[in-house]
Amino acid sequence: MQAPMDQPPFMHNPAQQARGLLVVDDHELLRLGLRTLVQSHAATSGQAVQVFEARSLQQALALYGEHEAKIALVFLDLHLPDSHGLSGLTTFVARYPRARVVVLSGVRDPALVRDALAIGASAYLTKSGDLQEVVDYIGALGLLKQHGTATPARAGQVDVANEKTPNRVLRTAAGEVVSLSNRQAQMLDWILVGLSNREIAAKAYVSEGTVKNHVSALLLLFDVRSRAHLVSLLR
Figure (cartoon, rainbow, N blue to C red):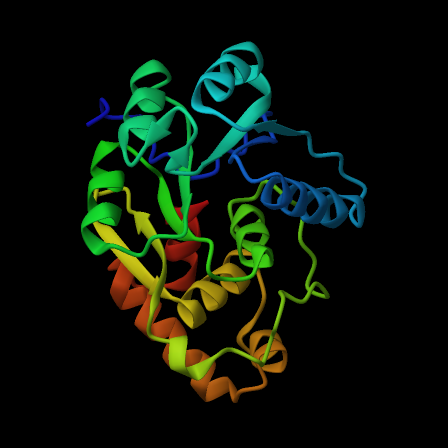
């Protein structure tokens, strides 16, 4: 497990200037899709986000070493041509212990999630959802400017059958693991970009009362007493 850090890897430090991303995956279409979405989203607010790409662990290690000052977040697949399972993550965080690494995997094994977070991953996201959910996660960290008019993909069309299926797993400042369903992750992203309960209700096509229930559940999950505390914990 990596050495303790001054702040949890997933928290956004406003003073940190790095805003680039490193996407490590041997599937060109996934890298292209994520890069296109991120840069398109950034362009709408006049930003320019640099996206580095690697198809192997060794290439990723070299790129990060060369551009570490520019890279704020690393998305790492667990199955690469030169690494398999958690070996790649272990190697990456051992070489760069202060890197903020998010596992992006097609596997939903609870044991694998737990082990990845223990090794030092900031979060564990699945590929089974829309890539826009990954972009929403990036925006929720403060790495992309987001406006109240932005609508995450499939708003109001969440698959009820999958609503309770863990889609995102985060490690809190206290080291606790928190699993979020698709709906909870979506709600959290909207909260972190500053939307009010009324605005969230309009986007999700639910009542404000339902939003309040979701907010209350998130506060309990993260063991905080207010939205402000929740935002300060995760930003």
